[in-house]
Image 1 (cartoon, rainbow over the protein chains, first blue to last red):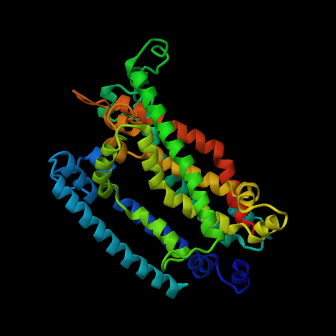
Image 2 (cartoon, rainbow over the protein chains, first blue to last red; image 1 turned 90 degrees about the vertical axis):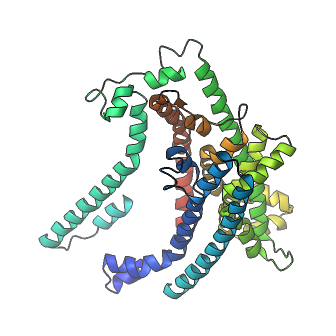
Image 3 (tube, rainbow over the protein chains, first blue to last red; image 1 turned 120 degrees about the vertical axis):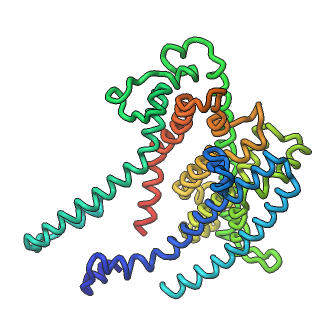
Length: 108
Length: 308
């Protein structure tokens, strides 16, 4: 396909932008979504580097819930937060997957 | 690299101006790549050099050994791993060795278990049709994959209660089971793609020659799937090796792993940067070695896939 693009007179930039990129798009979007999922879970680095400080400015949701468990031993509040966060993530990712699916269908 | 050389080989029909821009673009590309390699490798360099610094050099940010500061085995001596202390007895070294062993046992055990279960599941999903209520193969795969989005904090408390009831707290076996659970979706995903890349005709030929499903899987398909197996193994090994959250939560003395030990290098006079850096270096080393040895398999797997 790249050779066909070359025969048709496409420059390297054009052949990347109009041939390679659309073909790679589903993979790229999958990788992006997986990275988003992994970083939504981020807790250990935050806990160890800043412990959420200064005064919670660098907390992720995960690290905040962890600190609620560990520092305040407020198990009920922490579990409630965790369940709410799970529901939020499921809704967010469902919407994200739908949108990205529609978008890749349109572009590719 | 191969791309650049093969692209530069064909007939030279460009005049001088375009050759100048070509050289310029090459220089730009290489400098961008070098810059990014520097950005990626600098933290590792910093960690390794910090393990040889004294407290003053750490706080003053000295960077280049012998020019900025005089390297010393300080971090390694506190671990009992420097040349002058390695022969004597050291409690720090005993602790390090036991944590290191825990890390190796849990991550290798979990990766192997996940590979066995995962490749069986992936083979099933790739070759047979399932109907589980309204769920078909793709739905079942998505169900497996959806386990990935569970944040560890959501599972933390249930697992704490469950492991207490099963008296699996602070055991390596408990950690292995938990890590298997967390890496299984990725292993199933990789292995199913790998099995899908192997033609079904090979299975059919094996059946015609009188092999059972298990025989075809073990003797024909699995040897062909080695690149995928190695890729999945390395990925799950890295994920288990670096796992901190559950290890910090579910272990206390017996089954503590390396990341927990690295994170707990805070003494009464602040953080012992040198011993933390030495520990981190020792924690990075096994994965680097594994990566170098298995790189060949990864690359060969990629090229066989690309040739089709």
